[in-house]
Length: 295
Ligand SMILES: [Fe+2]
Image (cartoon, helix red, strand yellow):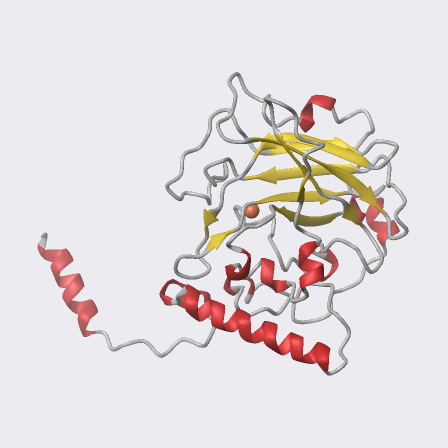
Protein backbone atom coordinates (compact mmCIF):
# COMPACT_ATOMS: atom_id res chain seq x y z
CA UNK A 1 0.00 0.00 0.00
CA UNK A 2 1.52 3.38 -0.91
CA UNK A 3 2.75 5.31 2.05
CA UNK A 4 0.55 8.35 1.51
CA UNK A 5 -2.66 6.26 1.49
CA UNK A 6 -1.62 4.44 4.66
CA UNK A 7 -1.08 7.74 6.34
CA UNK A 8 -4.49 8.90 5.24
CA UNK A 9 -6.16 5.81 6.66
CA UNK A 10 -4.32 6.13 9.94
CA UNK A 11 -5.26 9.74 10.28
CA UNK A 12 -8.92 8.89 9.62
CA UNK A 13 -8.83 6.42 12.47
CA UNK A 14 -7.77 9.22 14.75
CA UNK A 15 -10.71 11.41 13.81
CA UNK A 16 -13.24 11.44 16.64
CA UNK A 17 -16.57 9.80 15.83
CA UNK A 18 -19.11 12.04 14.18
CA UNK A 19 -22.08 13.35 16.06
CA UNK A 20 -25.02 10.94 15.94
CA UNK A 21 -27.17 11.64 12.90
CA UNK A 22 -30.72 12.80 13.31
CA UNK A 23 -33.38 10.11 12.98
CA UNK A 24 -34.47 9.24 9.44
CA UNK A 25 -31.50 10.85 7.73
CA UNK A 26 -31.08 9.13 4.37
CA UNK A 27 -27.42 8.45 5.16
CA UNK A 28 -28.55 6.00 7.83
CA UNK A 29 -30.58 3.93 5.46
CA UNK A 30 -27.90 1.41 4.57
CA UNK A 31 -27.79 0.03 8.09
CA UNK A 32 -31.54 -0.19 8.57
CA UNK A 33 -33.13 -3.56 8.07
CA UNK A 34 -36.42 -4.53 6.50
CA UNK A 35 -37.54 -5.55 9.98
CA UNK A 36 -36.95 -1.99 11.20
CA UNK A 37 -38.92 -0.56 8.30
CA UNK A 38 -41.71 -3.13 8.56
CA UNK A 39 -42.13 -2.35 12.24
CA UNK A 40 -42.64 1.33 11.38
CA UNK A 41 -44.99 0.50 8.50
CA UNK A 42 -47.05 -1.80 10.72
CA UNK A 43 -47.23 0.75 13.52
CA UNK A 44 -48.53 3.41 11.14
CA UNK A 45 -51.03 0.95 9.70
CA UNK A 46 -52.29 -0.04 13.15
CA UNK A 47 -52.64 3.60 14.15
CA UNK A 48 -54.67 4.23 11.02
CA UNK A 49 -56.94 1.27 11.74
CA UNK A 50 -57.47 2.57 15.25
CA UNK A 51 -58.29 6.02 13.89
CA UNK A 52 -60.93 4.47 11.63
CA UNK A 53 -62.47 2.70 14.62
CA UNK A 54 -62.51 6.02 16.42
CA UNK A 55 -64.51 7.56 13.61
CA UNK A 56 -61.89 9.06 11.31
CA UNK A 57 -62.63 9.29 7.60
CA UNK A 58 -60.80 6.83 5.31
CA UNK A 59 -57.71 8.32 3.73
CA UNK A 60 -57.60 8.07 -0.02
CA UNK A 61 -54.44 10.06 -0.63
CA UNK A 62 -50.85 9.14 0.11
CA UNK A 63 -49.15 10.54 3.14
CA UNK A 64 -46.51 12.98 2.03
CA UNK A 65 -44.80 12.76 5.38
CA UNK A 66 -44.27 9.00 5.57
CA UNK A 67 -41.04 8.30 7.49
CA UNK A 68 -40.51 4.70 6.27
CA UNK A 69 -40.12 6.15 2.76
CA UNK A 70 -36.70 7.45 3.72
CA UNK A 71 -35.64 8.99 0.44
CA UNK A 72 -38.72 11.24 0.43
CA UNK A 73 -38.07 12.74 3.84
CA UNK A 74 -35.99 15.65 2.65
CA UNK A 75 -37.90 16.27 -0.55
CA UNK A 76 -41.56 16.19 0.40
CA UNK A 77 -43.08 19.62 0.88
CA UNK A 78 -43.57 20.84 4.43
CA UNK A 79 -45.25 24.14 3.59
CA UNK A 80 -48.16 25.13 1.42
CA UNK A 81 -47.07 25.66 -2.12
CA UNK A 82 -47.37 28.88 -4.04
CA UNK A 83 -50.51 28.69 -6.10
CA UNK A 84 -50.37 29.89 -9.67
CA UNK A 85 -53.10 30.73 -12.13
CA UNK A 86 -53.30 27.66 -14.40
CA UNK A 87 -54.49 29.73 -17.34
CA UNK A 88 -51.38 31.90 -17.10
CA UNK A 89 -49.15 28.82 -17.06
CA UNK A 90 -50.83 27.51 -20.18
CA UNK A 91 -49.70 30.56 -22.09
CA UNK A 92 -46.13 29.30 -22.03
CA UNK A 93 -46.37 25.58 -21.21
CA UNK A 94 -45.88 23.01 -23.98
CA UNK A 95 -48.74 21.38 -25.80
CA UNK A 96 -49.10 18.20 -27.78
CA UNK A 97 -51.00 17.71 -30.98
CA UNK A 98 -53.53 14.99 -31.62
CA UNK A 99 -51.45 13.77 -34.55
CA UNK A 100 -48.28 13.35 -32.56
CA UNK A 101 -48.93 9.91 -31.10
CA UNK A 102 -48.52 6.94 -33.44
CA UNK A 103 -50.50 3.75 -32.85
CA UNK A 104 -47.31 1.69 -32.76
CA UNK A 105 -46.05 3.61 -29.73
CA UNK A 106 -48.37 1.55 -27.51
CA UNK A 107 -46.39 -1.63 -28.26
CA UNK A 108 -43.19 -1.60 -26.22
CA UNK A 109 -42.07 -4.93 -27.71
CA UNK A 110 -41.48 -3.66 -31.25
CA UNK A 111 -39.26 -0.65 -30.68
CA UNK A 112 -36.01 -2.40 -31.61
CA UNK A 113 -34.72 -4.90 -34.13
CA UNK A 114 -35.18 -7.91 -31.85
CA UNK A 115 -37.79 -9.02 -29.36
CA UNK A 116 -37.29 -8.19 -25.69
CA UNK A 117 -36.86 -10.97 -23.17
CA UNK A 118 -39.47 -11.68 -20.55
CA UNK A 119 -43.15 -12.37 -20.17
CA UNK A 120 -45.17 -10.55 -22.83
CA UNK A 121 -48.29 -8.94 -21.38
CA UNK A 122 -51.21 -6.82 -22.48
CA UNK A 123 -52.25 -4.04 -20.11
CA UNK A 124 -55.61 -2.50 -20.91
CA UNK A 125 -58.39 -0.60 -19.22
CA UNK A 126 -60.42 2.56 -19.28
CA UNK A 127 -59.87 6.07 -18.09
CA UNK A 128 -63.05 7.13 -16.31
CA UNK A 129 -64.31 10.18 -14.49
CA UNK A 130 -65.92 10.02 -11.07
CA UNK A 131 -69.31 9.24 -12.60
CA UNK A 132 -67.95 6.27 -14.53
CA UNK A 133 -68.02 8.13 -17.83
CA UNK A 134 -65.19 7.39 -20.29
CA UNK A 135 -62.55 10.05 -20.79
CA UNK A 136 -61.72 10.04 -24.48
CA UNK A 137 -58.68 11.57 -26.16
CA UNK A 138 -56.52 11.29 -23.05
CA UNK A 139 -52.76 10.98 -23.47
CA UNK A 140 -51.55 7.97 -21.47
CA UNK A 141 -47.81 7.46 -21.07
CA UNK A 142 -46.04 4.60 -19.32
CA UNK A 143 -42.48 3.80 -18.29
CA UNK A 144 -41.13 0.74 -16.58
CA UNK A 145 -38.17 -1.50 -15.83
CA UNK A 146 -37.39 -4.46 -18.06
CA UNK A 147 -38.04 -8.09 -17.12
CA UNK A 148 -34.87 -8.11 -15.03
CA UNK A 149 -35.95 -5.08 -13.05
CA UNK A 150 -33.49 -2.71 -14.74
CA UNK A 151 -34.24 0.77 -16.04
CA UNK A 152 -32.28 2.41 -18.79
CA UNK A 153 -31.25 5.33 -16.64
CA UNK A 154 -27.85 6.50 -15.48
CA UNK A 155 -28.91 6.29 -11.85
CA UNK A 156 -29.93 2.65 -12.14
CA UNK A 157 -26.65 0.76 -11.95
CA UNK A 158 -27.69 -2.33 -10.03
CA UNK A 159 -26.34 -5.60 -11.43
CA UNK A 160 -29.24 -6.72 -13.61
CA UNK A 161 -28.93 -6.83 -17.39
CA UNK A 162 -30.12 -4.12 -19.71
CA UNK A 163 -32.21 -5.55 -22.53
CA UNK A 164 -31.03 -4.03 -25.82
CA UNK A 165 -34.49 -4.66 -27.25
CA UNK A 166 -36.47 -2.95 -24.54
CA UNK A 167 -36.53 0.74 -23.69
CA UNK A 168 -39.57 0.63 -21.43
CA UNK A 169 -41.44 3.69 -22.65
CA UNK A 170 -44.78 3.86 -24.45
CA UNK A 171 -47.82 6.04 -24.94
CA UNK A 172 -51.25 6.09 -26.50
CA UNK A 173 -54.43 8.16 -26.72
CA UNK A 174 -57.63 6.81 -25.16
CA UNK A 175 -60.36 5.86 -27.59
CA UNK A 176 -63.96 7.13 -27.65
CA UNK A 177 -64.83 4.64 -24.89
CA UNK A 178 -61.93 5.85 -22.73
CA UNK A 179 -59.94 2.69 -23.34
CA UNK A 180 -56.21 2.33 -23.59
CA UNK A 181 -54.10 -0.72 -24.44
CA UNK A 182 -50.39 -1.45 -24.20
CA UNK A 183 -48.38 -4.49 -25.21
CA UNK A 184 -45.27 -4.75 -23.10
CA UNK A 185 -43.08 -7.03 -20.96
CA UNK A 186 -43.87 -7.76 -17.34
CA UNK A 187 -41.38 -5.70 -15.34
CA UNK A 188 -39.22 -7.29 -12.69
CA UNK A 189 -38.88 -6.26 -9.07
CA UNK A 190 -35.76 -4.24 -8.38
CA UNK A 191 -33.72 -3.13 -5.39
CA UNK A 192 -33.58 0.46 -4.26
CA UNK A 193 -31.54 1.92 -1.49
CA UNK A 194 -34.22 3.07 0.90
CA UNK A 195 -32.91 0.61 3.46
CA UNK A 196 -30.99 -2.65 3.52
CA UNK A 197 -32.59 -5.22 1.20
CA UNK A 198 -35.29 -2.84 -0.04
CA UNK A 199 -37.09 -4.11 -3.16
CA UNK A 200 -39.88 -2.46 -5.09
CA UNK A 201 -42.84 -4.59 -6.17
CA UNK A 202 -43.12 -4.92 -9.95
CA UNK A 203 -44.93 -1.88 -11.31
CA UNK A 204 -45.59 0.26 -14.35
CA UNK A 205 -45.55 4.05 -14.06
CA UNK A 206 -48.48 5.85 -15.64
CA UNK A 207 -48.85 9.51 -16.58
CA UNK A 208 -52.08 11.02 -17.84
CA UNK A 209 -52.75 14.43 -19.23
CA UNK A 210 -56.02 16.25 -19.38
CA UNK A 211 -56.50 18.75 -22.11
CA UNK A 212 -53.48 20.72 -20.92
CA UNK A 213 -50.09 19.82 -19.52
CA UNK A 214 -50.99 21.49 -16.25
CA UNK A 215 -53.54 18.75 -15.59
CA UNK A 216 -50.99 15.95 -15.54
CA UNK A 217 -51.32 13.16 -13.01
CA UNK A 218 -48.83 10.37 -12.32
CA UNK A 219 -49.40 7.03 -10.65
CA UNK A 220 -48.25 3.40 -10.63
CA UNK A 221 -49.93 0.13 -11.53
CA UNK A 222 -49.00 -3.02 -9.66
CA UNK A 223 -49.54 -6.72 -10.33
CA UNK A 224 -51.82 -8.91 -8.23
CA UNK A 225 -50.44 -11.08 -5.46
CA UNK A 226 -47.05 -9.44 -5.12
CA UNK A 227 -45.30 -10.62 -1.95
CA UNK A 228 -43.47 -7.30 -1.67
CA UNK A 229 -46.59 -5.17 -1.03
CA UNK A 230 -46.41 -5.26 2.78
CA UNK A 231 -42.69 -4.48 2.71
CA UNK A 232 -42.70 -1.53 0.29
CA UNK A 233 -42.69 1.93 1.89
CA UNK A 234 -43.92 3.58 -1.32
CA UNK A 235 -46.94 1.32 -1.76
CA UNK A 236 -47.58 1.71 1.96
CA UNK A 237 -47.67 5.51 1.83
CA UNK A 238 -51.32 4.83 1.05
CA UNK A 239 -52.55 3.61 4.39
CA UNK A 240 -56.04 2.63 3.28
CA UNK A 241 -56.32 -0.89 1.83
CA UNK A 242 -59.19 -0.06 -0.54
CA UNK A 243 -57.20 2.83 -1.97
CA UNK A 244 -54.15 0.60 -2.35
CA UNK A 245 -56.18 -2.07 -4.09
CA UNK A 246 -57.15 0.42 -6.76
CA UNK A 247 -53.52 0.49 -7.90
CA UNK A 248 -53.42 -3.27 -8.50
CA UNK A 249 -54.36 -4.63 -11.90
CA UNK A 250 -56.62 -7.64 -12.30
CA UNK A 251 -55.56 -10.67 -14.29
CA UNK A 252 -58.13 -10.87 -17.10
CA UNK A 253 -58.26 -14.08 -19.11
CA UNK A 254 -60.51 -12.43 -21.70
CA UNK A 255 -57.61 -10.08 -22.47
CA UNK A 256 -55.10 -12.91 -22.65
CA UNK A 257 -54.29 -13.94 -26.21
CA UNK A 258 -53.53 -17.58 -27.06
CA UNK A 259 -49.87 -18.35 -27.69
CA UNK A 260 -49.07 -14.69 -27.27
CA UNK A 261 -49.54 -12.72 -24.04
CA UNK A 262 -51.22 -12.62 -20.63
CA UNK A 263 -53.77 -9.86 -20.10
CA UNK A 264 -54.17 -7.47 -17.20
CA UNK A 265 -57.01 -5.02 -16.74
CA UNK A 266 -56.63 -1.74 -14.88
CA UNK A 267 -59.09 1.14 -14.94
CA UNK A 268 -58.02 4.62 -13.93
CA UNK A 269 -60.62 6.76 -12.18
CA UNK A 270 -59.73 10.43 -12.25
CA UNK A 271 -62.11 11.91 -9.69
CA UNK A 272 -64.57 11.04 -6.95
CA UNK A 273 -64.34 8.67 -3.99
CA UNK A 274 -63.13 5.77 -6.13
CA UNK A 275 -60.40 7.73 -7.82
CA UNK A 276 -57.11 6.07 -8.50
CA UNK A 277 -54.40 7.20 -6.15
CA UNK A 278 -52.07 9.60 -7.89
CA UNK A 279 -48.90 11.41 -7.07
CA UNK A 280 -50.40 14.84 -6.67
CA UNK A 281 -47.94 17.23 -8.24
CA UNK A 282 -49.69 20.19 -6.67
CA UNK A 283 -48.52 18.93 -3.31
CA UNK A 284 -45.36 17.11 -4.26
CA UNK A 285 -44.60 13.55 -5.31
CA UNK A 286 -45.05 11.13 -2.49
CA UNK A 287 -44.69 8.04 -4.62
CA UNK A 288 -42.18 7.84 -7.38
CA UNK A 289 -40.66 10.94 -8.74
CA UNK A 290 -39.48 11.57 -12.22
CA UNK A 291 -36.10 12.73 -10.93
CA UNK A 292 -35.32 9.29 -9.55
CA UNK A 293 -34.31 6.39 -11.71
CA UNK A 294 -37.32 4.44 -10.83
CA UNK A 295 -38.44 4.09 -7.30
FE1 LIG B 1 -40.24 2.40 -10.83
